[in-house]
Image (cartoon, rainbow, N blue to C red; front, side):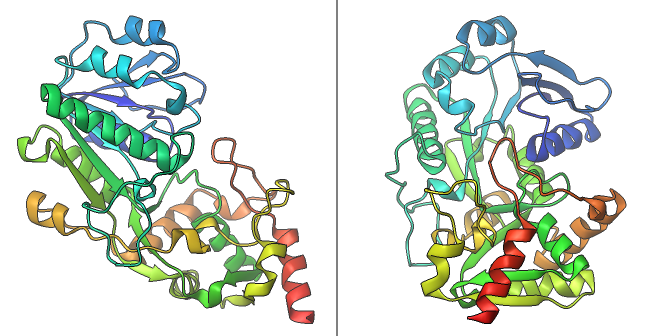
Length: 344
């Protein structure tokens, strides 16, 4: 298979490239060339900016691919691109377009688990979820018009090796290893679905070229767990007790995200907040495509913790700030919040 990957330098994109190469496929990566990355031998790299039509045409004009994996669909980059131009450039030149979407494309619903038939969010396309919804709808519109061979895959919370989302499992491993306080809002009852990156990657590659997947959207994740269960399970994996501090509802404005003070990071991960309260159903992926997860919640995080330790991630010193997502952590602020809450 001749595969083109949009992105390919971090997390899902990088692991997609590595898996494609491991399976013996001919891999081409297209990105802006900003991030230094060690790609598998034989990988072709095209430098182009999705916001510059001429550079995209110069890189892809006349090229044919069996499958395109669009992993670089973040609104800060792809959201400024000309989607119609890209579709016209690729329509008739590719065998399958696999779009990595998100659970955030959905309008939130209290009826769980959410199937693929749930309504799209009405958020503007400048937002993350709104952009995902807009892109999906435009791609499926083209499928109805011309047969454009698209599938959308909607993961929930993706975790695993090479994760570049800085307020998920990495800081949780560090808090546990160092005996730092772990702040939990909403009494630990917020539920979210978590899926290992390699299961997502495997599914996207497995469906490429399959006619029954074209024109379809698929949820792809694993168990839905509460934040309380999340912390307790990771504590058991690390082998350290969790020093849990609950954030009362009336204190959330003081310690959660405050747009008036964006320099202050929230004292808990973004998935612990109520806006991410959700559970996805993957019955469609299982029944239509025969999908089975390799990793459950515990085994997947145990695998990730093993990678974390082997890579020397436990030695991280400074509080990092994710240049793409803006996430991160501030252990000093978390300690201040814990002390204030315990003293109140």
